[in-house]
Image 1 (cartoon, rainbow, N blue to C red):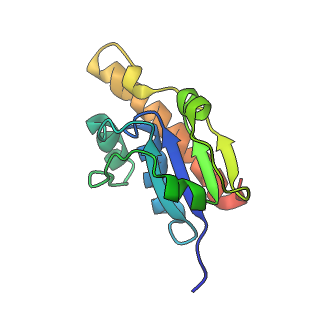
Image 2 (cartoon, one colour; image 1 turned 180 degrees about the horizontal axis):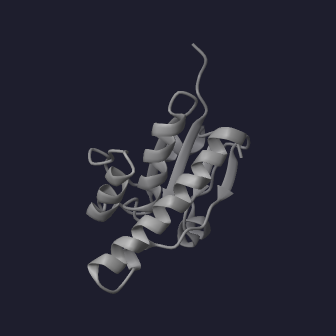
Image 3 (cartoon, rainbow, N blue to C red; image 1 turned 90 degrees about the vertical axis):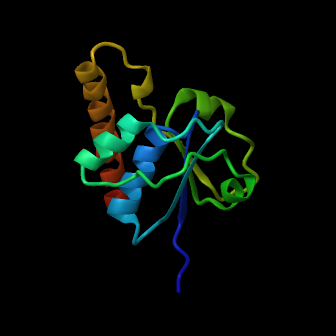
Length: 141
């Protein structure tokens, strides 16, 4: 069986954006890609991220929040950072064949306001990530 390209999504805390990207790529391209996500730290999966993903038909409630694993990082075909902090502080990747991209999205966990306003920010980020993942699955970029 042919090895699927490994996509490794990285964020600061592996709680929101990288979890959403992980969930969408598994749902939309899991037949084409092996998907992993991690953070510079592990903050736990954000319950609001779980909720908005469930609204979109993707269950990430069993995902774990993980710290970057150097072995996975160095065998990844794609390393995609989803926040500026992770992009700037990503560990050195020794795999010279890796494709590294930065897809910047606002951090919905930093949203303020009423619960409705905060959830609206989570949905906006979720929908932006979904669009980006759809393009990646369709065009490979």
